[in-house]
Length: 252
Image (cartoon, rainbow, N blue to C red; front, side, top):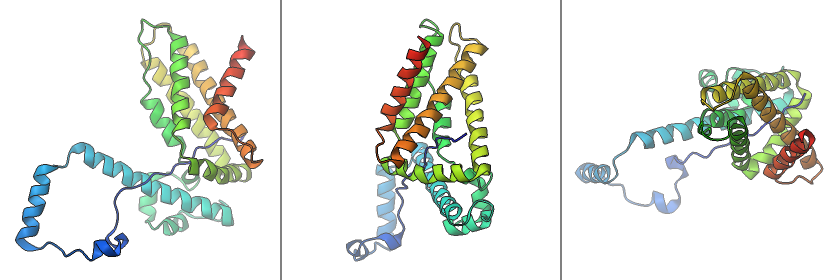
């Protein structure tokens, strides 16, 4: 079973001094007392906040994960999963093996970071109030969550996913991990639904909603990838909506 996998690429706003333009580099440095005074004035005008620090850490984390992911994909494509070591992936990404394991539990997982985005969306899922339409409203909320995740995928990442899809087709270890991660997401979504306090939503309903959501997710991305190979892929969000409507017609 193949897994439609979302890519994971994020941009980090920080830049090294070596990346400055010639005009920037030619600006005289502020030194001594003037430098201290200038920094103090800037700190008073724009004091750093906890949110700023959190955003910066999140961007750095995302950038590191993206570099490790790209390194893993490149090595898997070149020499296969079995012949690739964590140390090789870390060296190619410019990080230590210890840093690698802060972000990924295994070399196979490094090829599948896109599911982190869906996991975060599940954790942040807003469910309807008890006064609303119960399980039916919960299902709609899940569908809109999936639409938002798919719509947020950068265009360049969509095509990068084709590389991951080929790895999934050729590497059973990665494919098995993708399947296991999908099941973990099903359980995570089921439990989130049950914690939401939606009136009339029992274990059976929550399980069916979660399983259906992941079925549509996987089917949408698999079909989109096949059409992309043929150069005729529609927008992924439109593909998902087509699958959702087709399922409704089948169950009507």
